[in-house]
Amino acid sequence: MGSRRSDEIDSGLGQLFTRHRERRMTRVHATLWAIILATTVADILLTLVGTAAGL
Image (cartoon, rainbow, N blue to C red; front, side, top):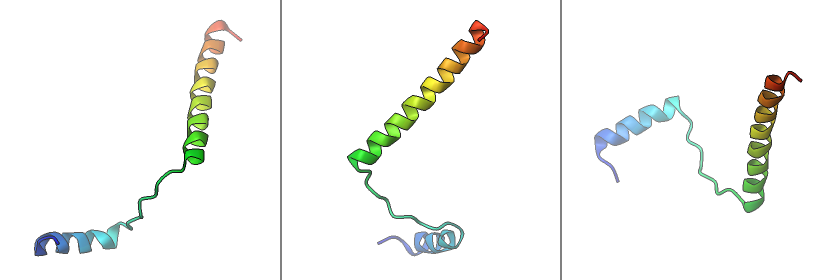
């Protein structure tokens, strides 16, 4: 339990921001995100290398 003041602040912020439940990421979901991030980085690097080489 918090103080009355912090409860008032929390209730005021609740009107501005919607709180979302934290969810645990499954192993499959984490793997998919890792693949997406890796391919994005590879795409950027290959684009920079290709541009520098004049391709």
